Length: 110
Length: 117
Image 1 (tube, rainbow over the protein chains, first blue to last red):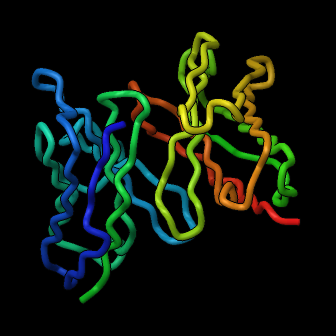
Image 2: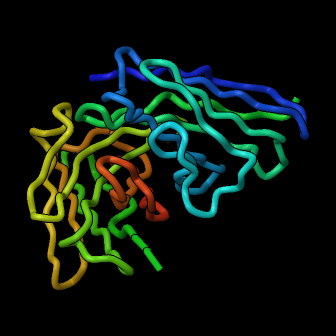
């Protein structure tokens, strides 16, 4: 299985930029298609799709969220961070079955 | 409006079988895949398995021997059954819609399951 590694916690100040990283144990890209996706999960809620295929914003997601990366290294950026963005963020790959998730990064206020 | 809703018992005894139902609306089970994903308390997400739009299923190999996913398209329902439950099966169980291969674009609210005697 493809293992996705995320830092457990990121502390950020409101109004600043947050950069959340996800590293895969092997490439999750096929040609120019990057099969990495990002989800946000607020406490007590279900996850919500933010970014699909590395850089595509899901429907209804604010433009302060963006994604980048290819191969094994991917980044979710939130700029500027708002209070409503305090949550856990998970990456997920769909390059191979089973789809796997990173352990999650909890975004906290500094 | 796309919606998914999980239902089932909140408490299951060790060694017993978990049965959950995912009722969907706003889309057809014959056009979209549906996944089951679970989350232990305070931990991350684990993919369990998938019901494809054509009725085929696939499972996480770690759970395959205990897990079964089925559906009733006339009732817009997908079912999960997992046997031989243990305490580490405690958690929240989500059904999700697959908007693109293995991209989960809609999630149910989750069903909380506790395995305890």
